[in-house]
Image (cartoon, rainbow, N blue to C red):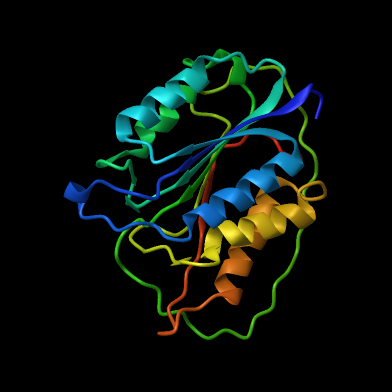
Length: 237
């Protein structure tokens, strides 16, 4: 990377929720937060962890981050650890649209991150359905990507976002109360081994494979993460 630093990483770790929400305590999330903090610091990010944030606090926190000067940073990352529903992430008081929190980093609102990757990792349910899985005989294959040219041009305001969800729309996301969540633990494992060699989408493909093949509930339920990318260039840490 041709910048002084990799960038800032904000981790929002919501564990304890207001009684009125009816949402359970997220045991195991502190293990995820600790492992993520260690992993992203090792990559070179400046990591800040915020625990038990309300919707108002999350919105204020990210608006402040978007107003900061990121000129000397190569990218920005934000990780949500919380309950959720499809397109919603839960503060400790209520759910809110993820879009409200991420849109403050659009190109027309955060000029110092224009043309730079804005990475959002979301460990949360996106519904209540569970995946029963299906038997397969296929084996994994690894591909390689060429480096894109960094051209100077006018780009869309929604460009260069990446959303890595722990599960697909409509499905729940599994978390071990002692070992942490399947998605976060897989993400940390793959990044720790391959962050300096693989492009981010290659990393996340391996995370998908690890979650899909290495984990299963006692009742044989499965999970597959979901990546939505608007990146315009390859990203290597």
